[in-house]
Image 1: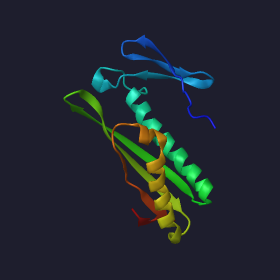
Image 2 (image 1 turned 30 degrees about the horizontal axis):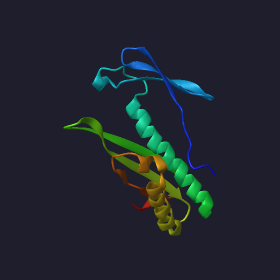
Image 3 (image 1 turned 120 degrees about the vertical axis):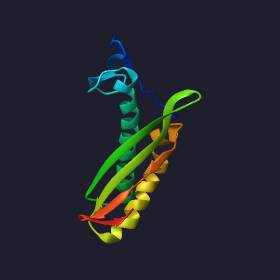
Image 4 (image 1 turned 180 degrees about the vertical axis):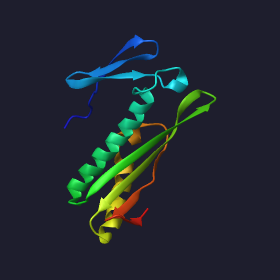
Length: 150
């Protein structure tokens, strides 16, 4: 197995604080702008959204892979992720990323194992491990509409 992998993105500026990103062999390209609070356009993806989406996508993929390897069946996983920007003496940066997964399991006795896998995915998500700000896990486990663990 290789010891490193590279992921290349191309970005082009198309107007003030806006542009598009693409990756070789991946469609579609995505339009982005600085967020409105930084004089960008509303209604389009921002680099800040890309950052938070990268954490979300990695967490979901990691959890899924761990469930497959563990032969753990679940009904559904929904994830809300919130990235918090803060300003310090060096400027703006993400100060925290909060993961709020809601895992639907079929049986109450699966809740503890599901929660352990959610926590393990947070610890092993390579994007989460690669960022400078802390990642916080706020999980909700449900069984057929009843909250059984948090």
